[in-house]
Image (cartoon, helix red, strand yellow):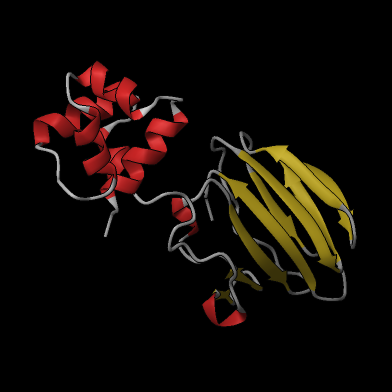
Length: 182
């Protein structure tokens, strides 16, 4: 449930307005603003729209939950989603569920010796990776880059790209895409 009074008060204070200044801009009384902020009365739709306009907030923003409210912050192994691709010899673990609603999408990809990731076509965005175990070859528009344990890669995703494991041991990589693409 949204605490309308609390949100109005926070917006008013964020705009450095007193109750009286806000009331004057809306041709209302200071007492009415006080009643709104203390949830002793509810504004009409017309008054609410006028309030939001003066406070510089879109209606959808006012009624959406603030960043982080009821949002999960910490994820455990039980939250991860894993998909194995035996044909490619790789397994992807989505380590932040519902990452499509965020700006970034982090995964952990495990690539068996001789395996590779899916070949990604050119797309908007950027990608970053950190090799946790083993060694991989980053193929970026047919150019090959060897990336060893403890090393990182970063590139614009506007070229075909994928990872290969040409080594003899499993490779594990933290791979992050923005916007989400995996």
